Length: 291
Ligand SMILES: [Zn+2]
Image (cartoon, rainbow, N blue to C red):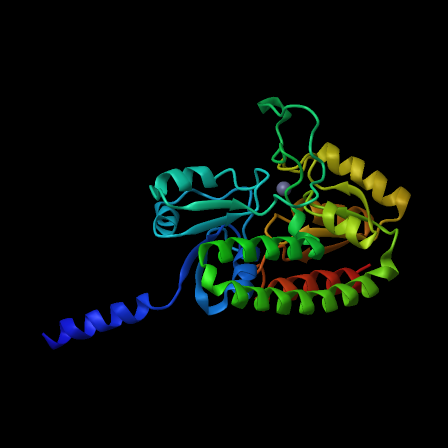
């Protein structure tokens, strides 16, 4: 009897807290939801930080995560091709799915209707907008709006957290912009086309990609082309997402002396990368040290 009483007490205590259940498709979104929601939100994520977010295996355990969630945030623009299957499989009729791309100034959006022969993984434009920290602010605002709509009484709390986040990231954006100004106009080779938003923000140039097309594996003929570009333009650095195989970049390095720099492109993507700001710090410090 006593046990039942305590169990009921615990249940009623937990019900008295507004607790929005959120699932994030990626760890960057997970971190931003924590920034805005703090202890009013419980949040989980699907794609690990050291995993290619384009290719995530559809597991029953991910459907279970979504089964009891109120909101599912994702990057959108087709990054998470795998997510619709999870949403269907969750059989959660009250789940709200929110694409954080809505207010983003999207790049590389094709002006033709994508079809299967197009063959790459960016059929709706380039979805890697989170690597521009100004876009992280847009994502945070979108999250703030969604959480406030879900729990009106916590709107002021979420707003304060949003303001705190914006204050901190604005200071970091100034610091990052100052640091990166020494590299303005410099050309880089990137592995995947994850870097266009980042490059535009900080004024660096893209000389080529290790992938012949986004999502298409490196090939000897494409590598040979890159050797020519690296030599003729004197390019010093390949920047690559740390979850890809480094065998093609290492070949380029052996042939030209170019440096291969591996960076995290998500939170928890490397040891000690536990927030968006730590991730950007790591990327920018590594580029500066190696170019
Ligand atoms: Zn991509």
